[in-house]
Length: 133
Image (cartoon, rainbow, N blue to C red; front, side, top):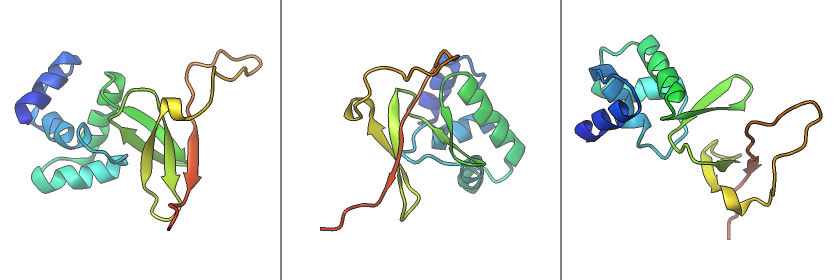
Protein backbone atom coordinates (compact mmCIF):
# COMPACT_ATOMS: atom_id res chain seq x y z
CA UNK A 1 0.00 0.00 0.00
CA UNK A 2 2.91 2.39 0.66
CA UNK A 3 3.78 2.53 -3.05
CA UNK A 4 0.17 3.41 -3.93
CA UNK A 5 0.10 6.11 -1.25
CA UNK A 6 3.35 7.55 -2.57
CA UNK A 7 1.85 7.71 -6.06
CA UNK A 8 -1.36 9.29 -4.75
CA UNK A 9 0.65 12.00 -3.01
CA UNK A 10 2.77 12.64 -6.10
CA UNK A 11 -0.32 12.89 -8.34
CA UNK A 12 -1.65 15.61 -6.04
CA UNK A 13 1.60 17.57 -6.02
CA UNK A 14 2.70 16.46 -2.55
CA UNK A 15 6.36 15.55 -2.13
CA UNK A 16 6.26 12.18 -0.33
CA UNK A 17 8.25 11.87 2.86
CA UNK A 18 8.18 9.04 5.36
CA UNK A 19 5.97 11.12 7.67
CA UNK A 20 3.53 12.13 4.93
CA UNK A 21 3.22 8.55 3.68
CA UNK A 22 2.59 7.35 7.25
CA UNK A 23 -0.23 9.89 7.64
CA UNK A 24 -1.62 9.05 4.19
CA UNK A 25 -1.54 5.32 4.95
CA UNK A 26 -4.16 5.89 7.64
CA UNK A 27 -6.14 8.99 6.78
CA UNK A 28 -6.68 8.37 3.06
CA UNK A 29 -8.07 4.88 3.64
CA UNK A 30 -10.22 5.23 6.74
CA UNK A 31 -14.01 5.28 6.72
CA UNK A 32 -13.89 7.31 9.93
CA UNK A 33 -13.82 11.11 10.18
CA UNK A 34 -10.86 11.50 12.53
CA UNK A 35 -9.66 14.63 14.29
CA UNK A 36 -6.01 15.63 13.94
CA UNK A 37 -5.26 14.20 17.39
CA UNK A 38 -6.90 10.89 16.44
CA UNK A 39 -4.73 10.75 13.31
CA UNK A 40 -1.63 11.54 15.36
CA UNK A 41 -2.40 8.81 17.95
CA UNK A 42 -3.09 6.25 15.22
CA UNK A 43 -0.02 7.09 13.10
CA UNK A 44 2.20 7.19 16.20
CA UNK A 45 1.62 3.47 16.80
CA UNK A 46 3.42 2.65 13.53
CA UNK A 47 5.68 5.73 13.36
CA UNK A 48 6.53 6.53 17.02
CA UNK A 49 8.83 9.47 16.30
CA UNK A 50 6.22 11.51 14.38
CA UNK A 51 5.48 14.89 15.95
CA UNK A 52 1.97 16.18 16.50
CA UNK A 53 2.83 19.36 14.57
CA UNK A 54 3.95 17.25 11.60
CA UNK A 55 0.59 15.51 11.53
CA UNK A 56 -1.31 18.81 11.75
CA UNK A 57 0.81 20.34 8.97
CA UNK A 58 0.43 17.24 6.81
CA UNK A 59 -3.35 17.23 7.22
CA UNK A 60 -3.51 20.91 6.27
CA UNK A 61 -1.36 20.20 3.20
CA UNK A 62 -3.61 17.28 2.20
CA UNK A 63 -6.66 19.56 2.48
CA UNK A 64 -4.93 22.24 0.40
CA UNK A 65 -4.06 19.68 -2.29
CA UNK A 66 -7.57 18.20 -2.41
CA UNK A 67 -6.79 14.84 -0.80
CA UNK A 68 -8.99 15.51 2.24
CA UNK A 69 -11.82 17.77 3.28
CA UNK A 70 -11.92 19.42 6.67
CA UNK A 71 -15.23 19.90 8.47
CA UNK A 72 -16.23 21.61 11.70
CA UNK A 73 -18.79 19.17 13.03
CA UNK A 74 -19.16 21.04 16.31
CA UNK A 75 -17.69 24.16 17.86
CA UNK A 76 -13.94 23.64 18.01
CA UNK A 77 -14.08 20.07 16.67
CA UNK A 78 -12.48 19.70 13.25
CA UNK A 79 -12.51 16.37 11.46
CA UNK A 80 -10.94 15.16 8.24
CA UNK A 81 -12.74 13.24 5.53
CA UNK A 82 -11.00 11.32 2.73
CA UNK A 83 -14.26 11.27 0.77
CA UNK A 84 -13.82 14.45 -1.26
CA UNK A 85 -16.94 13.93 -3.37
CA UNK A 86 -20.11 15.87 -2.52
CA UNK A 87 -22.00 14.17 0.28
CA UNK A 88 -23.77 14.92 3.55
CA UNK A 89 -23.18 13.62 7.07
CA UNK A 90 -25.14 11.95 9.84
CA UNK A 91 -23.81 12.12 13.40
CA UNK A 92 -24.93 9.28 15.67
CA UNK A 93 -26.01 10.92 18.95
CA UNK A 94 -25.23 7.76 20.94
CA UNK A 95 -21.76 6.96 19.63
CA UNK A 96 -20.58 10.22 18.06
CA UNK A 97 -19.74 8.32 14.88
CA UNK A 98 -19.99 10.34 11.68
CA UNK A 99 -21.47 8.59 8.65
CA UNK A 100 -21.40 9.66 5.03
CA UNK A 101 -24.81 10.16 3.44
CA UNK A 102 -25.02 10.08 -0.37
CA UNK A 103 -25.63 13.50 -1.88
CA UNK A 104 -28.72 12.42 -3.82
CA UNK A 105 -30.47 10.95 -0.77
CA UNK A 106 -31.15 14.45 0.59
CA UNK A 107 -33.72 16.46 -1.35
CA UNK A 108 -32.08 19.82 -1.99
CA UNK A 109 -32.35 20.87 -5.60
CA UNK A 110 -30.10 23.96 -5.57
CA UNK A 111 -27.86 25.90 -3.20
CA UNK A 112 -29.75 28.10 -0.79
CA UNK A 113 -30.23 31.72 -1.79
CA UNK A 114 -28.59 33.74 0.96
CA UNK A 115 -28.96 37.48 0.45
CA UNK A 116 -25.62 39.14 -0.16
CA UNK A 117 -23.65 35.90 -0.58
CA UNK A 118 -22.51 33.70 -3.40
CA UNK A 119 -22.76 30.24 -1.84
CA UNK A 120 -19.59 28.29 -2.67
CA UNK A 121 -20.55 24.97 -1.11
CA UNK A 122 -23.02 23.49 1.32
CA UNK A 123 -23.85 20.24 3.05
CA UNK A 124 -26.48 18.92 5.39
CA UNK A 125 -25.44 17.61 8.79
CA UNK A 126 -28.06 15.37 10.36
CA UNK A 127 -28.08 14.01 13.89
CA UNK A 128 -29.97 11.01 15.13
CA UNK A 129 -29.93 7.61 16.77
CA UNK A 130 -30.03 4.20 15.23
CA UNK A 131 -33.46 2.57 15.28
CA UNK A 132 -33.56 -0.58 17.37
CA UNK A 133 -35.98 -3.15 16.05
